[in-house]
Image (cartoon, rainbow over all chains, first blue to last red; front, side):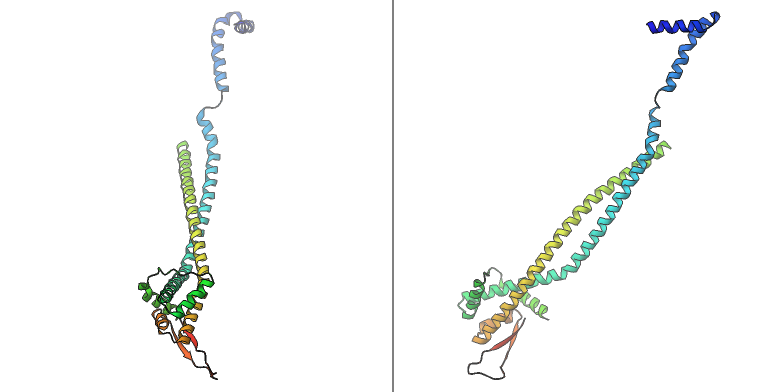
Length: 153
Length: 104
């Protein structure tokens, strides 16, 4: 309240006696206009100022992620190639294991039936810590025989 | 201009999101593939050791069959596609051992 009084007094000192009423009415409006001009920029201006850095950052992120995706895709292709190259070896190994299982199971059955030679072999394997699982069916022996002959050739 | 910038930003952000999702998916896929490959390599390495055992077994069976004239063993080997030939030694001792050559 006191500052309002002092402003009014100063204004009255600067103006001529005849202008007192009109100038006093205009001055607060001009002050309000200049104060409005000094306020911070409105929201759209701030967005525009941030748009370019944001765009550049997004672009950098996208390029970085895209490059990593490309690298991982290359990695995936190499892994697929390695698996494809290893596949025949794995199939041979499976065939070999099946043949071994069937041969061992048949030998065990022969030993159980009283064959002396088979029993010698089974005992020898037992000494080495190898126990035979006779659960392997001899029905697949024909397939194993084919596989074994194929592997032998 | 403002709309254009906003649209471009949204598009880039969506592309970045898609790339991040693809990155995670590919990473998991590759990790699984790498594990599977390592298991297969281990399987093959173990099978190489078993191949030696298989050959030894076949040789032993063939030798026992030839030495004892065991027809049951011989037919067992034949069922598995394995045949052998007896080779008579050059200088025959008093009690010649039967040497066999197994052909798995």
